[in-house]
Image 1 (cartoon, rainbow, N blue to C red):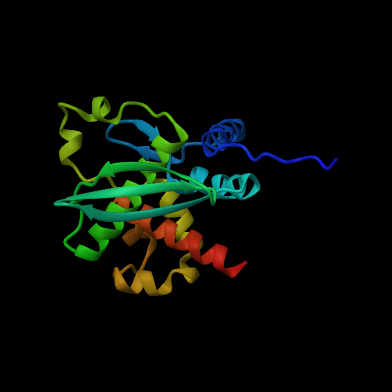
Image 2: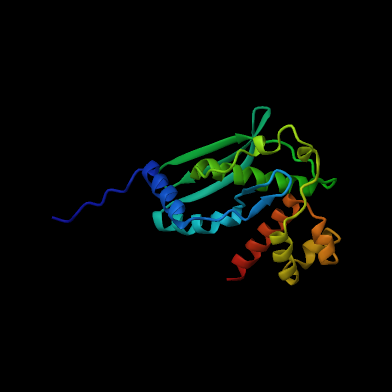
Length: 195
């Protein structure tokens, strides 16, 4: 008699994904110099997550949409038979006069927060790290890691640099962490599409 293969429920696949991501030991490359804490950026864990999800027969869908009058970020983990949603209300970033950059920042932040919930990744309490200090009122400039990575790949981000009037490494140092993260996300997409 042929063996009948019973696929795991999505919740068990998600738990297996969480364990495999933990075993991969992602490193926190983001650093907030004012609050003095490290944090996960999307590129610290998302490439590993995407590979593992493919192996487990899973995929994700991310969107920002309104439900009634409230805007939510929604990350759905799917396997073809069911889905598990992770839903967070959004907040408006205010680090740029450019509304497109603010929207990109919101997308990046909300995606990261949804994935942090989904994978149950932990970080230092960011609110406690900056609460009651002047740091939460200051601009968080790009980290040295971000500036170096962007400078090394400037030829792949020519259009983005022109749009943001970036002409030198010194200009990169004046980007916010969020702007640099957004550029690094675009770089990652370009590198993945080049493969």
